[in-house]
Image 1 (tube, rainbow, N blue to C red):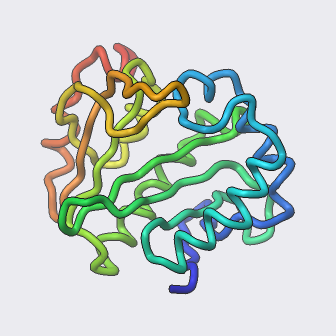
Image 2: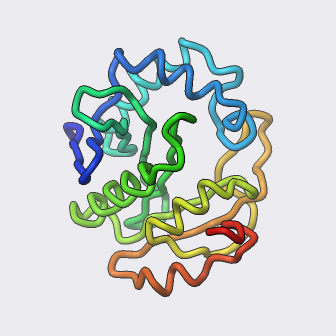
Amino acid sequence: MDPVELRTERLVLNQPTGDDLARVVEYCRDPLFEHYMTLPWPYQEKDAVFFVERLVPDGWRTEREYTWALREASTGPLLGVVGMRVQPEPRTVDVGYWLGGPHRGHGHMTKATRAAVSWAFDSGRCDTVLWECVAGNRASARVARSAGFSFTGAGTGRVTLRDGSQPDAWLGARHRGGDEELARSTWPESTIGADA
């Protein structure tokens, strides 16, 4: 399928391009990413080229993974990335995201995640969106909570880290037609912090 462009009030979600390579490298070298993400480490330009030129287009072509670059305008600089991957469970995808350090704390990722989830539901791609993060990643948990996900527990993650281990993870889900207020109430303070 051809990539789909999404829009929110403040953001455009479109495809990463060659013009984004320097920012992908810069942002993916954030020390937080070493601990919380499955990206190659240290992250190099060749990793960004593979991501932008191969992984993203192949995902859309095969309809197995849908990835968007976040921007404030169609041709604006890259702020971050949100993606959804088809899961083995029927009518289920998972969501993952990252945001460049200078762009955190402005609500961008919550808006982008909501837009991606709405697209997945509205296009009939799925009925359930799963979320997980390495236990301790409160920023990711706060985004998931704000984007309407319910907390479903803690356990071994689905993702495999660079060393082959599967980390302790916080898990969540959002279901088509789910009650967001009820979902919001499921989050333990230990996952989102007392100030959330």
